[in-house]
Length: 138
Ligand SMILES: [Zn+2]
Image 1 (cartoon, rainbow, N blue to C red):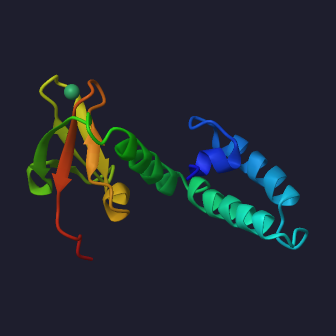
Image 2: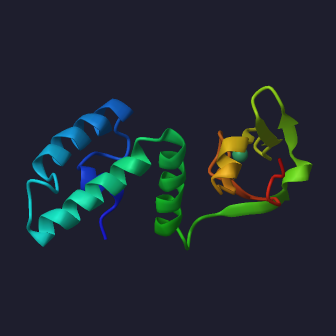
């Protein structure tokens, strides 16, 4: 299974502009209307699907984390599980934060919580925490 980045032939650190440019090149080449062969159809669907995720920075971030989790399933160090209620709510930035034992910060935004991200890394060391929370009520 190719990653969305492999489908679009870009590096995982590619800028949004680069991804957009590459998508436009590829979709011209593999447009379903121009290609009736099944292999090409599959490829154009994969390209569209990859673009749908990577064009949106929030979804891209969630996908990056998902990829990373798949790769590091064994050695991913989750330092602790933390209840969202125990984190500090920063209303202006719409985020929750907690100080790491290295004195760095764990910061998770409400947008991230909304798309289902629950693992957040320290901005200063390699530790991660899992944030436990119930579905946010409107
Ligand atoms: Zn830390």
